[in-house]
Structure formats: structure tokens, C-alpha cells
Amino acid sequence: MDAASRHTLGQHLQTLRQSHGLSLSQLAAQAKVAKSNLSRLEQGDGNPTLDTLWRLARQLGVPFGTLVAPLAAAVDDAGASVQLIMQSRSGVPVDAYLMRLAPRHRREAEAHTAGTRETVQLIEGSLTVGPPEESRQLDVGELYTFDSDRPHAYLSGDSGAALLVTIVYLPEPAAHV
Image (cartoon, rainbow, N blue to C red; front, side, top):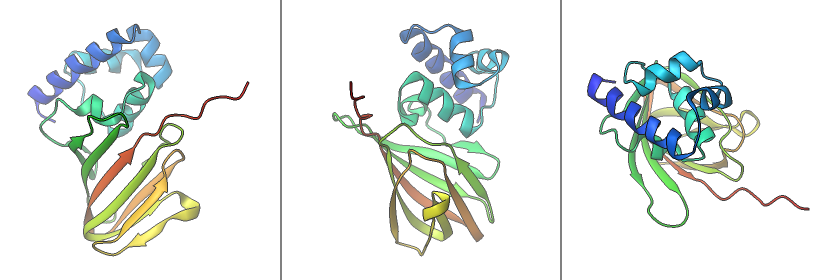
């Protein structure tokens, strides 16, 4: 990520954190990120991993796309590149991303919020995707939709992979009293 993108992301992250009434220490502890790392991110100095950004978005209660929306470029992280294509403006939060994976790259994804569904369509290359007990190998053009409120993974083949990822953040079920 270039310096201008890091600065834009840092300012946006700080604005989101403050709008949620969280101190730097509170968000860092909740997201399991070192306070010094979070501070550097907000100052535009850090180079965050995708996992760090996902954890921050989750703790802020916003879709990942809301956190990275101000960025024009993709977020790159050791063999994986994710770029927000579009974010819904309707009542149901939906994010659409272009993801590229280097050859033979495995990307482990943490569970998203309860009720979240993900649809992956392979554009190029080869890919195995999904929760460990339900992963599927996709051919170019195939779609796979799964509950992404549990850990899941993306594993590219020898030529890498390019895929469209659509994430629908459904409301968490209400607790029964």
C-alpha cells in the first residue's frame, strides 16, 4: 500500500474509532492488535495485514468494505490482494471484492459476524474455498455460497486464482430472553 493510501486509511480508521466512542487502547484490546500498531496505522505509518483490517472492522461493527472504502487501490498481503469493487447502499450491507491469490497460496479467513454469507465465483486459475468441512474445488465460472460466520480458507492452484467475492452481512439473530 502506498503512503497516500496508508494515510487515507489511517484517517478513516481514526474517524470510525472515534465515532464509536472507543479509545485507542479499547479498540486495540478488542481487536487483539498491539496499541502501538494501531497508533501507527492511524498515523498512516503501518502496513496492515488483511487479518488485522478484518479484526478492526469487526470490532468497529462495520463491514470490511466500509473500512477500506476510501482506498482506490487493492489491499495486498503476502500472496493475496483484495480490492473493494462496490458496496451496497441499501438496508442490507453487501460488499463485492476482486481477490487475487498468488500460485499455491493459502489464505485463512477468520469467522465473520453471525449470519454472514459469502459467494465466491472463480474468474481465472484454480481454487479450493470454504469452511474446512465443506470446502469445494471450483472451476472457472463456478459459484459457491457458504456461511462465512465460521473460519474458512481460500487455496489457489499452480497458476494462482482471480475471484469475485460477495459478502452479505445479515443481521445477527436476536438473543432469546
